Amino acid sequence: QGSSMIVPKKIQQGDQNNDNVRALQLFLIAKGYLSADATGYYGNKTVGAVKKFQDAKRIPGGDGTVVGPATRAAISADVEAGASTPMQ
Image 1 (cartoon, one colour):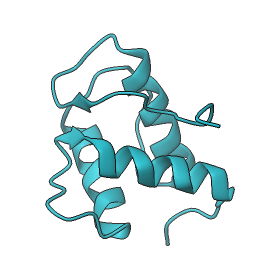
Image 2 (cartoon, helix red, strand yellow):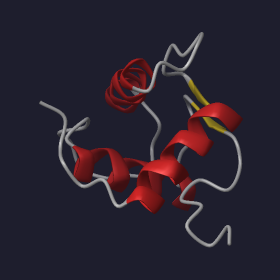
Image 3 (cartoon, helix red, strand yellow):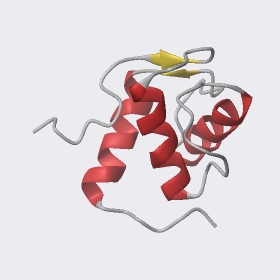
């Protein structure tokens, strides 16, 4: 379908005023990876949360600074699976 693609393109640290970053942050907040507001700014808190997600999904080379194809695919798979249990 593709309609559940929360992050349709690459985003990275430093991006701001960005609806894709805001959507990513809302996803990370809902999953328990981010405990901050969804501001649309990809700063240090978002980097840390993305790294936790990448580590949990065993995405190789994930340092949290970039949400590329592998991370976007993992986010979409998570959404499609309806896995709403937060990280322990």
